[in-house]
Length: 74
Image (cartoon, rainbow, N blue to C red):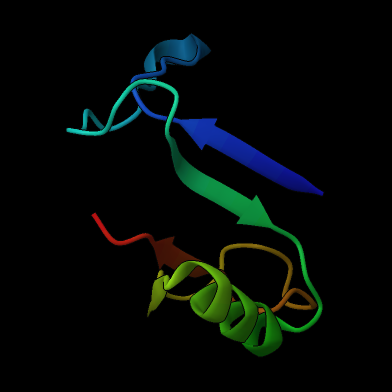
């Protein structure tokens, strides 16, 4: 399952997306469920030129691979 979020959005419960300089409708966050994080990072780095940084320890079930933050170049 993949979820794509765009900038300038608000969700119920008072949680606001971080304001950004990005144009409305431009993706700013993508969730990707994968069993091979390294291969997914290699793919997106090659195709889109994205860089990666650790988001810290996963808060998900320990059978899940670590989560990774993906940043696209500005």
